[in-house]
Image 1 (cartoon, rainbow, N blue to C red):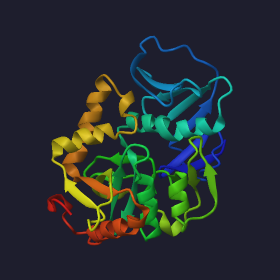
Image 2 (cartoon, rainbow, N blue to C red; image 1 turned 180 degrees about the vertical axis):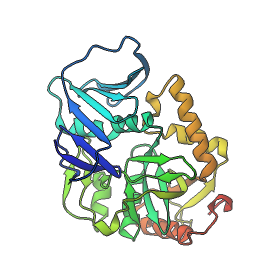
Image 3 (tube, helix red, strand yellow; image 1 turned 90 degrees about the horizontal axis):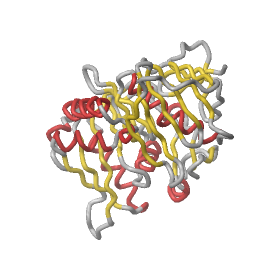
Length: 320
């Protein structure tokens, strides 16, 4: 089975991932195997579900043996209690691209949750000795903003799924070293390679970002930005930020969890505790960004200025 570099570690997989870099002589953190259907655990109970499309849903179940992520189209993925062993039971004639997207998204996010790591739906870049994260729903521009910052000298930590270690300090863990862009953003950002893959959602996946533009080590998380697209204002600032109180921040982090809709019951309490701890350690800002590519460079320049001094105490700056 090939080994792949992903999320700063190694995935040992019976399924091929052409969008990931192959590695050797690396101890795997996750083992992905394919197999025959298993009988559901007698103590299995549902936690939550959400609709991927109008016709496809994903559901999460928990038992004493771990978790099971069930997709209507690609099949079921059993994740053990330590978040290390993943067993895939394919659905009927699954689309390989969708299977890979499910593994690199909800399935590995579930594995991180099982291991006690909080996963956010966002992108992150490294600046100086720390890092910043962008959180938002789909179509809000978090990947576009992260890629634009990489073009200006930041280093990509991850796109789409951001694992955060909550030990002594909040630390952004390296994740997916590729960026997913819709057509308009892809056409606007001209400084990237032409080597891309088209994902199942139709996005362009930029895969061969230069090594010097990637960050492969854990990085102190200095700030989290919740992106709110706005209408451009004549003569207005390119971007504005407002520091959120801890309680509001915690609820916002829960709503931007990678698998928040799936984690019900007691796991919802665990998720809220993680979000509260993260909000206590890292300032969370509302970031008003105009929907105008002509202002994107100005937005990036402002963010760079806010974070050019690694000793800047962002927790007390209020608004920018």
